[in-house]
Structures are given as C-alpha cells and as structure tokens.
Length: 254
Image (cartoon, rainbow, N blue to C red; front, side, top):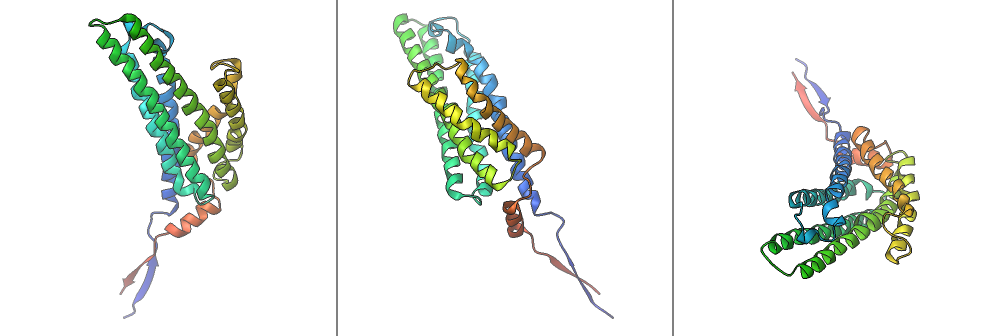
C-alpha cells in the first residue's frame, strides 16, 4: 500500500482582505458625500434665517441634518482607520498625520452640530416665553460658531487630508495616479482660499471657492474607484499578500 501526501492551499486568497479594506474605505468615502450634501441643504432654514430661533422653525429638518453631519463625521474617521494599515507601509508618519487630520475634521464637525442643536433647544425653550432680542443674539452667535467650524473642518482639514493621503496614494500607486494628482493640485488651492476667507480677503461662497472642485472630485473618485476596482497591484499589496498568505495544509491519502 502506498501513501501519498498532498499539499492543498486554502481557497481564500490573501488578496481578499485587501479587497475588503478597499471596499470599506471606498464605501465610507461615498457615505461622506451621501450624508454631508443633504445635510447642508437641510440646514438652510437655520443658517439663512437670522431670526430662526424666535420663528416657527423647522426643527425636525434641522435635527435630521445634524444626524447626517454626525454620520459624515464618523465616516471621516472610518476612512482613516480603514486605510491606515495599508498606507502606513508607504510612510507611517504621513499615514498617522492623515488619521490625525481626519479625527480633527470629525471633531470640528461635531462642534458645529452641537452649536446648531443648541439653537433648536433655545428656540423650543423660548417658545414658552423669553427675551426675543437675547435669543436672537444667542442664535446668531451659535450659527457663527457653526460657520467657523465649517471653514476649519470640511475645508482646511480637507486640504491637509488631500496633501497627506494624496502623497501616499501617488507614491504607492495603489490607485491610478491621476486621482491623487487631483488632490495634490486642489489642496494648495483650497488652502489658499480658506486662509483668504479667514482673514476677510474673500467670503465663503464667493467665486473663488471654485477651488474646492478638485478636492470634491478627488475624494469622490477615490471612493468610487476603491469600491469598484480596489487597490492596484503594487509593492505594498504584494508585501501584505506575502505576510497574510495562509499556510498550506497537508492531507494524507492512503
């Protein structure tokens, strides 16, 4: 009787974990758009009406917008957490910087959400009676806080995110280089117009804010690419595949 030893690899490929990472990161990027754009539209009543706090209000609409902004903030953190194990192999310092700026962006967004929730609370409390002039002043101050968080969160931090992650993606070749190139071009433009707005040289919403377009396309195209295609083969993916490759197992045929 002869005994034959055969070696069989497990069916799950090592690249499947990388594909899942790309899918999660890409989906989270898409979620940031799906949450933030409707939120901005739904916030129109409280942002545009200086007397919102003493008016009839649209509290349910504003609450939904705040909820979507929180989803956006959590998705921002998720993109960094999902991508960090991969991009740190290109540069751990840049990857850690990307995670930090993403966390800062999310925190600033939440501060803006809390300020608008305070407007809703004060409006509902003021309905039972109160000094309207004081309420209007307080409401305008809270909306001003939110406006500044919008400048520093989704704008200033978005520029820094693009510089850090764009550099990592461009050098690593994990996605087509034209995608991170958009971020690397748009980052200094957005940074410049953000600083100009900070010092009163221009206003938010002025034609100069067309500078946000490359960043918008960069993040959206990155998310869509990661969802549909995943990471391109590169030394990083090859190295990770080698490290995570499952050992073969042996079977014995008698």
